[in-house]
Length: 320
Image 1 (tube, rainbow, N blue to C red):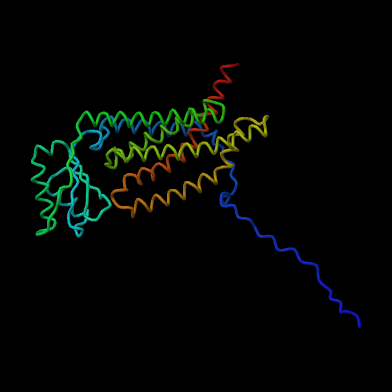
Image 2 (cartoon, rainbow, N blue to C red):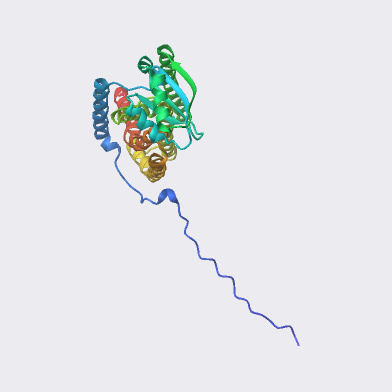
């Protein structure tokens, strides 16, 4: 008796699973960004002029680091909350900024230098004693930031911003072998930073070292977004050398629009959570990035790419 024969069916091909590309959840678009160039220029021009007029009339408020003042570190019982300290200092008429040092009960307060003439030590001691009657408080340190030091810090902050802008021009220009691409990216960054300063001033924030760090972070985000579009444009120019520049730029922006909106949306939601629940210490930083994500995405789509096209068009006309 022979061995039983078993008939086997050929294996069926597994059902193809759709691959989800999260950067393409938004349908393909075909917006004419270059055609709206002058509308973008007009809108940004109005915003810049309005911001300049506001800052000229109101001035740019600066923190203790830049204008000089007094920095006091103190310790109170852990039961005392930072909002209680802020309220008591405001009630005492002391112009202050308070932030937590991370250790329970330890805080740092910044005062204007004029407060020293109003017996700052005595008034601050009374405020801290009143926060927790019968419990001890301690002044850990007290430092003065003079006008000369503040001026030097301000110069160093401006130098850091200028150096970062120059570095971006060189980097983008070298990477894409065209200096005007780097200039266009940095003009968009200056646009973003200037509008952000006006926004922060309008809402009562003072420009200090934390906000300088936030503005530099915003600059990095903005130039990264611009480089992605420029990289796509360079690729199209290499693959389709006969394509009209206007069509190439529009196609590059539309191809990366889904990525731009999704990344900006994710960052916006993350920073929004930080602004709502991150506490007062992180609020200036998070609010700066919250506004910066919006204005940075706008300048990338409406300013940087249009500047490249406008420059190419102008130089072409000059050459002819």
